[in-house]
Image 1 (cartoon, helix red, strand yellow):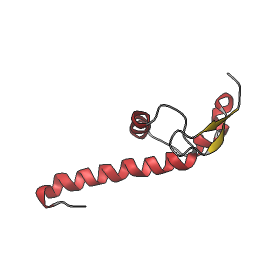
Image 2 (image 1 turned 45 degrees about the horizontal axis):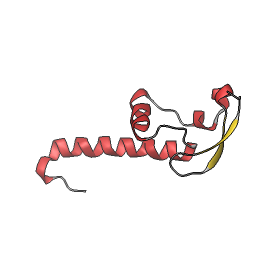
Image 3 (image 1 turned 60 degrees about the vertical axis):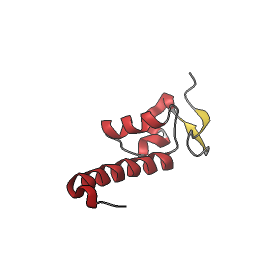
Length: 80
């Protein structure tokens, strides 16, 4: 596999350079993800994503966690 390749984000179709040969220098490395966040994103997309989409999905994951906790606390009284 080449060290660098032009790819398109699987979510937004933005073009970016994937640096799989130098993963610590890749644009995706700028978005730190824990194991749960990575699994959430992996469940949604099979291919590389741009850093903007990774950040958006990380925020989406935490929003869903927060809303789930609110719903558990408030029960039927919870509404978005």
